[in-house]
Image (cartoon, rainbow, N blue to C red):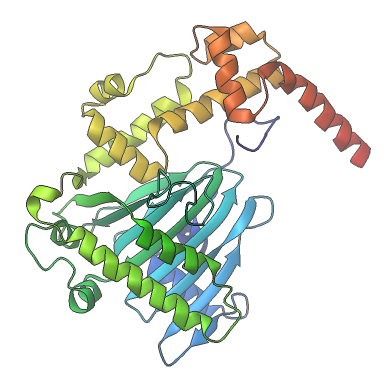
Length: 365
């Protein structure tokens, strides 16, 4: 169930992510950390000069949701961003090529950062590691839908990955392809993570950054993650079927897919059909879409359909049967089931809840 927005129409104002908010005109990860250093009064840092570790916490601005980002740097070679946010509005930013390899440990919402008890030896579905690097000159945009995001993102220079972790030294390995994207392309690869990864991520999230030793502890976990990641991605050629390469044209194609999915509410879209329309295959479409927008095609489209349905319910006050048809459901019962699964209550209760919310606002005023 997602947070209720009764007055929205599915066209929320977009905000930026941390590159857009703190990276200035350059818009890079490195620029974000320089900005914090140059504005220490506004962004007080906890530092360990001996090991060149720095930590800054930034809370999500009021009105844009709840949560925070933690920014950690290990010298100039490794940067980490810990995201624990519930975004109230869509967020988008431009990713500029800066020569860093990115590793994103995605803990999809809703996620409890604790080891599973009911299924020993397994990792919750959806917990993955995604690695990527773009060639110089290739820039693209990423976007996040409103909702809960729990993730750890690591950004490392190719040199430190090679020299300290032996990452990508073997030609033909996934690691090598990540270190050496072809001109005009971005190389990405996704892996499921195991319990060892999940345990380190859990401990990293649990650090309060209140004690002197917390910085060194966080750095040790980041180094553990990089070391384990190097082992995961240095696989021979035949074991890297999940590695993919996207061109600038394909990145633009995924943006076109996003536009179609967020506006074509009534059409009977299928992933194979959409892929044919865009001139690609289903595997590439699904992989690229999740990489750029942090969600599956189904979840993305479903959110926009449900938000559109809510708008038609509370603003246009159309009959439920009409709304069901307008957002692509042949049967009202199927629409009601999907609406309840998304919002936590059936469509017929939406107008009543809106009226109650209006009364509460008038009383508060």
